[in-house]
Length: 471
Image 1 (cartoon, rainbow, N blue to C red):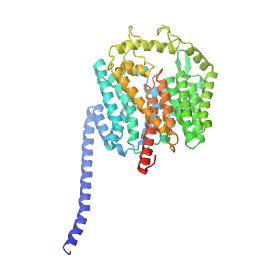
Image 2 (image 1 turned 90 degrees about the vertical axis):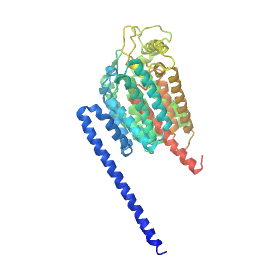
Image 3 (image 1 turned 135 degrees about the vertical axis):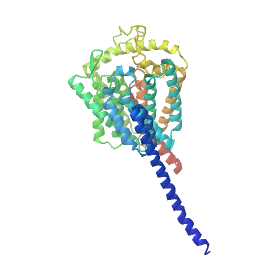
């Protein structure tokens, strides 16, 4: 016994010592790697700033778990919304330069990769999306050649997938209420600008009509973002505290939506509000509240001279119209013509399509006057760019998402977040029938952030209830 005690004491003392030594060696190794990285970074910058990008990416991936996710994503989205008009334009679609929107997209991707490598949640989403986007980006390169122009669409769509990956791997910090606040904060300044444009009769001239676009590139994109902001604001008011600030923001974003005079944006907002009202549990009075607000917004839109004119003009469009782009007198007639011109493009590669960005980056010619003009239909765009296989995968992913959201709708005690997710998804899917819902990156970021927050937060609730043995 006398010989055993000293040995045991020595062993108990040696174990912490070895642990401290290993920790110090690890820290020293990390510091050594950091010094080497900084040296390489400096050498790369002296040669070309582009050479520094991979090193910055590796450093961001290594430090991803130490970056505060909520403020980082929030600030990035605020910057993206407020600078959309300044950094994007129709001419930019044909530019190979990397602007601020591209840098934000790349940052989202790098941040998502770093979090995923550390925590490995949402693996099927991350890996499946990465494989699909890589495949159809390679097809685009084969179609148009290798350049930043052909890579841009793949990077842009990857950045929208990156947001859900960030949400799932951020250890639950993105609650639905927090994500809603981010969407509200990002759109607040743009909504004020849009209302100012409405009051001063300024904005963007679209077909001879002056329509507010806020800080966005087009009134249609502004309307869709504002519609999402109205929906999340009403959800926060009805199901998350009934704060007067949320009621105020809902009214502000509703006025901003009307100021864009986007028929598609207005219709998408009505779809969101009706779905939010009808799918949420509760009394009939609460269900009808959202529907009543939808009717109020529609009535306000129709009461304005330009709104009434737009509704009358677009509703008179014939589906069987043979008008061409040069003679079409309504935006809907132009859409029908554009879709007809895209079908022959799809027939050139019906199975796998012509690659991401084909319908966006191809410049117009005398033979194809609509090339380079965005399709105004996301389903047709994916059909041409990814073929029948790609469109089928997109529709399958949408069906899975709707199924998961429908399951969340029936869960109790979670502030009706399932109804919110279904409302945003329904509005975006409806808008995609006649507009460029996902081509407007800001709309895509807002929608994917909210839907991912709904699914991720309810997954955590379901796991806790499963461990507790409850249903």
